[in-house]
Every structure is written in structure tokens, then in C-alpha cells.
Amino acid sequence: MASSNTAAVDMRPDAAEAFAEKIGNIINSGTITVMLSIGHRTGLFDAMAGQPSRTSAEIAAPLGLSERYVREWLASMVTGGIVHYDPIMKTYFLPDAHSACLTRGAPLGNFAVYAQFIPMAGAVQDTIIDRFTSGEGTSYDDYPCFHSIMAEDSGQNVVDQMFNEILPLAGGIRDRLEAGIDVLDAGCGSGRALIAMAARYPNSRFTGYDLCADAIATARRSAAKASIANVSFTARDLTGFDEVGRYDFVTSFDAVHDQKDPQGLLTGIYRALRNGGVHLMQDIGGSAHLENNIDFPFAAFLYTLSCLHCMPISLGQDGAGLGTMWGWETAERMLEEAGFPEIVRHVLPHDPMNVWFVSRKG
Image (cartoon, rainbow, N blue to C red; front, side, top):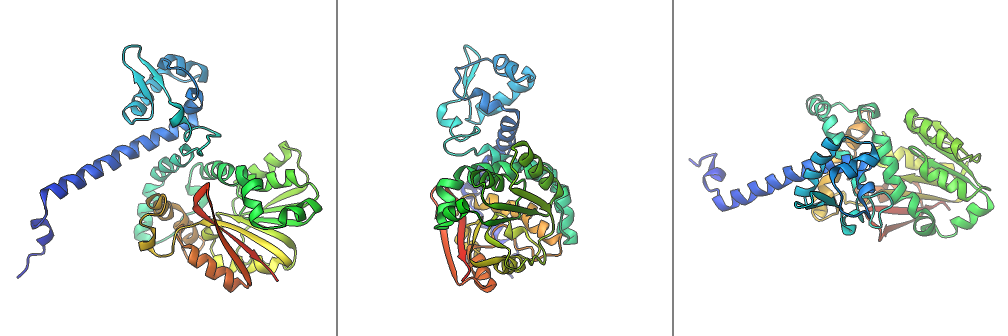
């Protein structure tokens, strides 16, 4: 009779040791990720960018931070290969090639923004472990700082690219915005994208809907601070959304897959558009099929976020729980089922992780 432990008996020591080393590297990198988040939130990376090699005290003082904590953080960054260290002078230096993806406004995008998801994941771990047994979902209140992280993500991937890269995908929409049309952002979050458009196109009228009252409150404060009067924000559940023929342009930025009823929302968006209206939809560009995502950028990161956030958020609304990696194929099929006769899919050079759909009504 064959042993149930055949795999263990036949295990090659060299393969096991190589895999153990891989796991060790993963754990080590995970701790560095937490420190990347701290470096971003404290402003340490921004303060070190473009500066000469300095002591920990010289780095900490202008930020009003504790030198002892900064010194220990720097040790993690040095051993993690992020910061360079001069042991003779006991000074620290952030190379330009490293600050190019770790600072606000960085030319390659600020990857430290995404590092913040890892500490957030740790904060909800016990909640998610409980859900593994109960099968229940979560609510946005379970996630500390979620909307501030998403606002930063939107700032660099959507707002910064809005006028040169994103709106041109919907050919002719900029001229219509200049002339004056009605615009909805479905799942607007903290409103950065909508406020940017409202500021650029004062003749158009902009509406933002989002489930989370705290995100809407932030959006309203931001619009008031910028003295933008042609935009309004309302906290509302988009389940059953049905405002027939009210808008000329509807956007949804990384929002549809989190909904209780993604198909219902897309059908509602189709009905809400006037004839000739356009829906511009951003979502994660992975495939619906796991085997197609093995080499997809940040695939493990995205599946982790799906397990910890996007899937349970939908389940918490008694939704389908499609998750982050619901797949561009699923999105395209749902747009078709919503009624759109013309759907064009785009992937932008600056953002290989996302897919952009431009769908026109009639």
C-alpha cells in the first residue's frame, strides 16, 4: 500500500532548501514593506530625496522625528538595500535611482503608496481569519486609512494622467466637457478625479456618488477648499442605481468590482446615459482565469488584497464577492450584457496593472 507521505519521502533536500530560502526572502521583504510604508507616511523618503549623505540626527530633526526611531528605521532600509550607508561617517543616502519610485511625484510612480496596504492587511488579519470560518463579509469601517491610501493611488494613476492620457481614450469627450455636459463618477471615493475635472471644465456639471460617508465628507471639504462650485457629492449605495437619461459621461475608477451587484450597476450606468453618452471604466486588468495571471504585474499582491478587502467588502453587502481579479473578460461581458453596443478596451503604457474600457450608448 502506497504511503500517504510519498511526497515527503521523495523530497529532494536541495529543492527544499531552495524553497526555504525563497520563503525566508519573502518574510524579509514583507518586513521591509512595512518600513517602506512608515518611510512614506512620515515623509522620510521625501526628506532624503536629492539630499547629500547625512546622519540620522540630521535627517530626523527637520521632520520633528525621534532620532532613535529614525536610526532604527534607517538600519532596516540599509540592510534592505533601499538606503546607502557610510560606516566611517555614519551617514545615510537615498540614491536618485531609488527615490524615483519612493517619493511623492516620483517619475516612476510612488510605490511606497502601495506599501501601506501591507500594514493595513495586518490590522485586519484577525477579522479575516474569523471570516474564513463564518464566510461573512466586512465593511469599510474595518479598514484603517483605506480611503486615504486609495486617494493617493488615484492621485498618481488617475488624476495625474487624466488630461493627457485618460480622457483622450474617450475620443471627443474633452470638447464636450468644454462645452458643458452632465458627468457622474460612480464610486468616487474621496473625489480627487472628479474635482480635477470640475476645475478644468467649469461649464460642465459633476456629481459623485460613493457608499462611504467619510470619503464623501473628505470630497466635500476638498471641493470647498478649492472653491469649486460645479461639483456635488452624495453618500449613497449604488445598489439598484437607476437614474434614466441623466448623464452624458459616466466614469468609474477601480470601483465596479467592489460593488454588491456589479452587473446591476453597469446596467444602471447604461440606462443613466443619454443617447451618445460615454462610460469610461477603469478596473484591474488581470484575467478571470488564474493560469493567465501567473506573470501578471503584482498578481500575488492583487489576489491578497482581494482576499483581505475587495471580495469580503462585496460579501459584506450580500454581494457576489467577485474580488479584485474578477477579470477583464468578466468586465467586458457585463458591459455587453448591460447593453453597450460599442466597447473598446485599452491598456495604458504608464499603468500595465489596469484596464480601461470606453463604452458608448447608441
